[in-house]
Amino acid sequence: MSTRHINPEGLHRSPAFSQAVVVEQPAKTIYIGGQNGVGPDGKVVGPTLGEQARQAFRNLATILESEGASLANIVHWRIAVVEGHTFVDEGVAAFQEVWNPADPPPAITVHFVAGLGPDFLVEIDAVAVV
Image (cartoon, rainbow, N blue to C red; front, side, top):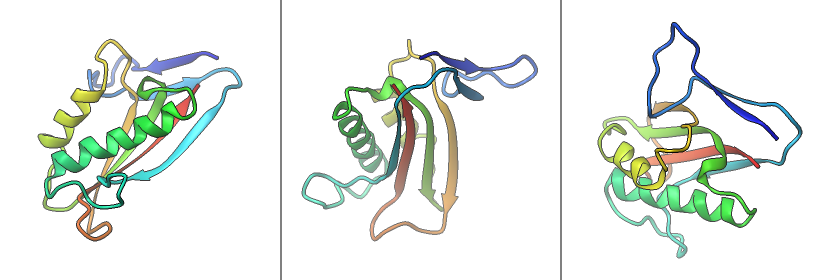
């Protein structure tokens, strides 16, 4: 399996995301449903976006590990943030805690939404290729 991260000339190049990711051979693809800041007990872990983002990333890592994969296998994140909150400070800090800067960053889409479930501030889904 070959994965290429695409950042063509003429487009902004960021250390935080790739413009696109190409998977060139048959591989196992894992589609991960939206993960919130919910702990194993099913309760929201805290009132801040940072706390909830860290837990959502931990949940993603747990799912991937159950399939022999890691966060480095993610080729696309889709992040929903409740309006009135910003992902730039706390969310990016949480991302930087879990992402190895030596790995090429995935493609990322961030949406601001009117609301999520009760007390949820962020939801992250992902596609990983192993």
